[in-house]
Length: 270
Image 1 (cartoon, one colour):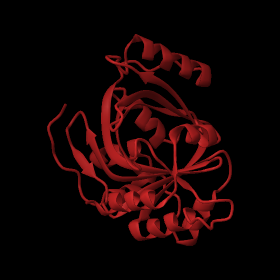
Image 2 (tube, helix red, strand yellow):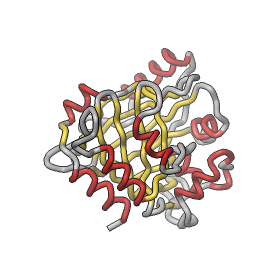
Image 3 (cartoon, one colour):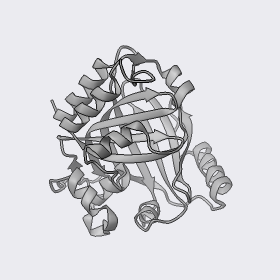
């Protein structure tokens, strides 16, 4: 098994469980500040042990559990324009930027159409609509939802010509304390839908994201003590930079080299 997947699985099984309803009640965090870290497996194991220790002041972080499972398979399809408007807005650090995706929770079959906004002060705000049956992420209903979110939040019109641009697959364990959530992703594989090129993340790294309403969390401070600093990295932008380095990685260069140490592999478009 991939070492990072094994590590998140062990950490989740060692923690006390928490149900999804309680997670949403205590730390749904659709509006939050995110910090991403590329964490070596051995450091992640120490971090998880500290946070889930039953003797932790205020109580331990608990692991999301659904149907007896503690870590879960995620599949996301990101949408962009032919000229990659949303990718370049992030690459250039535009003040108001967003990402558009369909997320599939493979273990349950649930599907969500999501728009992730980044505010001028760095806050992430997620808007989402559940997809049912034969619903398509870019049908008229979802297009109207997208247009309403972008017009209401940014005063801009939705981009035309959206098509699938990048597909990601990975496994995730989620740890929760009051008002704080930590997602731990492993086994990330990204695929460029236009070229078919595929890149796999370093199996010795866990992508840890801390999500909170405000300042640095205990997890952030622990990672800093271990010498791990926040990385300018998202799965969409970092993944696209890995499969299409000719687009220019700029400020992401170091994080992309760390996350994807091996060159992308050729594949079949579609």
